[in-house]
Image (cartoon, rainbow, N blue to C red; front, side, top):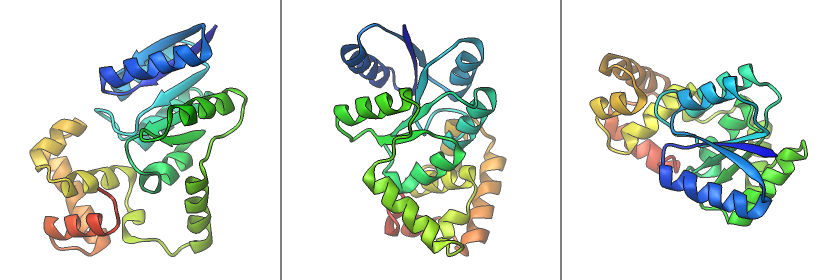
Amino acid sequence: MLRILIADDHPLFRQGLADLITREFGAVTIGEAGTAAEMLNLVRTQAWDVVVMDVSMPGRSGPEALRDLKQERPRLPVLVLSMHAEDQYAVRMIKAGANGYVTKASAAGDVCNALRQLLAGEKYISASVGEHLAVVVKSGSEKSPHETLSDREFQVLRLIASGKTSKEIAEELCLSAATVSTYRTRILEKMQLKNNSEITHYAIKHGLV
């Protein structure tokens, strides 16, 4: 029987996706995880045919959690299903080991097609992701300032730009306020920005929020 693990911090979304997969694939065992830690524990202790994971879950950032998963199960196919536009996280997640990337705004058929390709041992990359990857490869070392950030720094940047306070960011990412402040300092230094307002302006200008 097909075994699929869904990792997302929204129970209603997990249920809706589980219903979609069951309707499409028939006999299937669905596992659910609400945090990166729960996902990694289930990957370590049980066998799965494919994992469907969200980029943003409590705890570790999406790329970090994905790298941990791939260290545990290098050959386990992972489909990233995210609310973030493909040009924001797709490249980072593919570099971290994702076998496919689909936005939550995609049609249900796209999700099912992506799962079929992963289960067949193939990768799923949409046309828009492919185009973005081509641009990244072509540009080589000519990176935008935000592309020089680590995965965690990029995550903190987006949260700052969305209007969250350091305390709120710390709670969401399970970090201390001091650690968030350190990340903020690194972001400002790397991107040569002065304050949160400039971070927000940059993020909006480049479609990061």
